[in-house]
Image 1 (cartoon, rainbow, N blue to C red):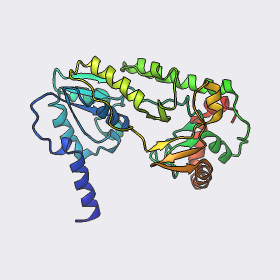
Image 2: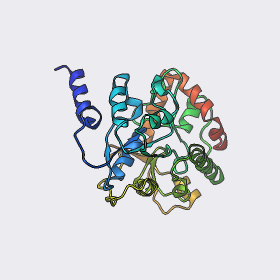
Image 3: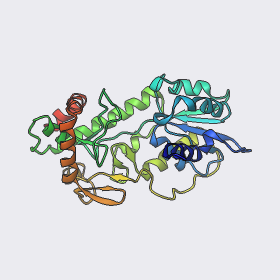
Image 4: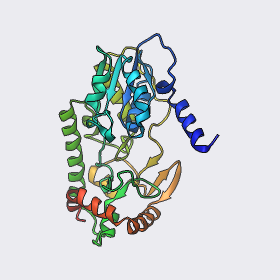
Length: 302
């Protein structure tokens, strides 16, 4: 068996609920979105609905669509993040997915959780030429490193007011997305955040999943009792904890200057050096990042 065939076989086994479902007497459901959807699925363990495991939508291929259509036609519950129509050229938009679900299926929309209040310099950049392009070591950009790569002076520290302003703007954006898409809310939980709430700007910690799962459970009247989370979710990458942020937000926490990646400490200076080298090879990413995050960079004095 070739490595490609082995990988495909492993994928089909991992997502057997999609490709080779086993019969189930009780109600079933599916959660659709990015990696956060899988975390929510795990946090909802213990409900009386069997929640099926499917690939994140950015990994679905055209060959998966017949399997997904069959699954949606039979489930009792659909939970989805906001996804635009015809995402990646396929009918994977939230509206399209809900339309494909069987008549009478209960549904809820949950927000994509992105919050920069604890990590105000951290950013995600989707370069137009290759939205999947990401820098080495950790797939996050530091606006200070981006500014340096663009030739700006990034040495001046941001004021406490500026750090709080960036966090409030991020919280306001999350609330706006909740209202626009009619999602189950979670922004209120982040109004007084701790580092337990967000490991990075888009990897919530267990306290967030506990609350969101409880709210989805109630909104959809799932029944059963949610089980305690057996392990930390989205635990692979932890960002540094800046002393400036701790002071600005009045947090009860110790600063940590390094990243934690797969359980190992990685010096922030090593990440910065690797990213600067990568930016020299990808100058278009610097341009795209500086344009997309211009407002936050201005607030932070970059």
